[in-house]
Length: 314
Image (tube, rainbow, N blue to C red):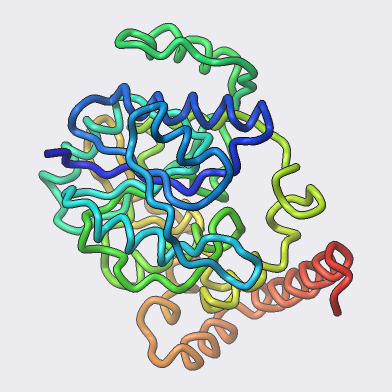
């Protein structure tokens, strides 16, 4: 029986480049061996044919929002209902994974009962089908470290956690901004060890354009991203890797290095993590962080203006 369920909600397999990089990603997950099982979730064009061709599981029935986009809560819960794997790994459909992910899960499970593994990715241009076999990581990773670029720690492309965590996810839209930040926030708020695994898990993003999104606009300019942020409780809850509680260094789970900046940030987010109800947490946060709160309001206004320009909706 597989111990890790790797799952994703792919983009349609219509654009030749998107099709290539998604097949590369899925095959890299398959190469991790018998400890993993793979699930493709959704009704996007080519999904079922690709799943059958590559010999992986698929789920066609998933709840969607009013725009027709699959919902994160439905994706997570549906896979959990179909799989008996001990650990879940949601990963974006263009991300290549390597054996160090399996090794890292084994390391963390011995130390933490409830955890969330997140981390930075490498960005790299991949145009062709990769020759993914038993020995492919060594040569390919040399190319990654030479040609690739480490992405900024603002977004996350994989989330690994025990199956009994994250059972109450809001109805976020997949592939849009905000829900990944909420995962980190929710882990911190509920006492789940939120671990930056950048130094332990190699994740490679195969670069692509945004032609699969409405009007080809980046996800931050889509109305569903604004809805995601509202569902998450506002911009103040948009946590990044700067707010994790732990990180992995030299195969050890440690606390982030203490610094003045870290202390100030932890004081600033204290109400968000510990105050109830939400309105009180937000009020206390605004009092402790007046400049950041004002900046957040300006960002919200800018985001709404960009979305209105994108969609033509008021």
